[in-house]
Amino acid sequence: MKAIFEPVDMEKWERKPYFEYYCNTVKCKYNLNANIDITTLVSRSKAKGLKFFPVFLYVIMRAINQNKEFRMSFDEQKQLGYWNHLLPSYTIFHEDDKTFSDVWSEYDENFGIFYQTIINDIVTYKHVKGIKARLGRPVNFCSISSLPWLSFTGFAQDTYEPSDLLFPLIRFGKYFDERNKILIPFAIFVNHAVADGYHTAKLINDIQDYASSVEDWIKV
Image 1 (cartoon, helix red, strand yellow):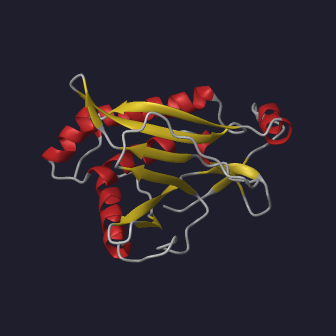
Image 2: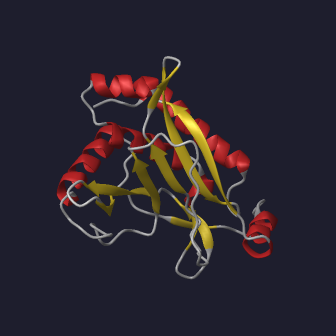
């Protein structure tokens, strides 16, 4: 899918005062944690012989790409705008030395194409060591990592240096059983300049909707 950047008309943008406030006056970012019910998602994935990680990655990216607030960034001229889509940038864990490497893959709204792309890229880069296993990552990306060893109740992160990054940072943990449901801890780090609590809550609810309506899209 070709990446297209659409600049924001700041004089007509309803969020201009909020963007400027959280960029210049109170430089604010925040974390939000939630448990996603993946009971149906896990059941159908297992029934079809699918690996969970690329399936859940699709759910997250499908939701991200239908919420424009999470596709915002600056272009090379520092102009604010929206990308027509983001692609996933995720980590591969190396069991032998307990290190990880970043990999990115192309995005496709068709689940079958997306799933096979992720599977192929993991196989291609799984033995490549170093922080960046696949070079040349496009600028329209969403960072997603898994912590499959822990069902965390909260996750927070930040950097000490100023950053122009407006894309969200997403983490999910080890899923667990609770009251006949399978839940997975989900955490998202958001720049308040582009997304308020409403937008982040909507994104998480959209992820939940895709996780619950599996039969509508899991066609392989």
